[in-house]
Amino acid sequence: MNRTTAEQAILAVRDGVRVFVGSGAAVPLGLLDAFATRARHFRDVEVCQLLTLGPAPYVAPELEGHVRHNAFFVGLNTRAAVQAGRADFTPVFLSEIPLLLRTSMTIDVALVQVSPPDAHGFCSLGVSVDIVKEAVEQARV
Image 1 (tube, rainbow, N blue to C red):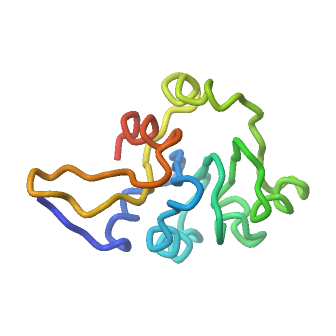
Image 2: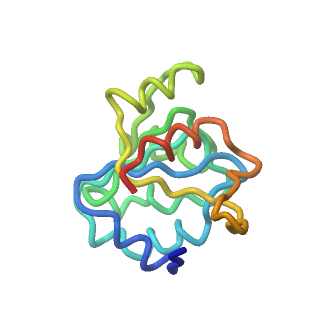
């Protein structure tokens, strides 16, 4: 079983990829911090998410051109960026998002929070499975 740091994991994010961020109360805060630290090195990275609670550092005005956010639900932490035109909103029914992730919005990298692996290497997606399961299954990384 390979383990890595958040900083090492973020090296999987390359220019021009689509990154999915875990939802609700299961936002991977350590990965988001590492992502935000490297965000100025990226070009044309799209971050998509259902709804995150807490910080959304990838919508900062100074990251324009580096990272663009695309929300399936606009929360308080991303609303100003969407209203200012620095982020996007894709209106879609929750039940249709898995199909969207399999077809026209494929995921390159999924940043999600999971439990520590058990003796067999299995992890739990915890409290916020929603569309995260599909994103994990479809993501290249």
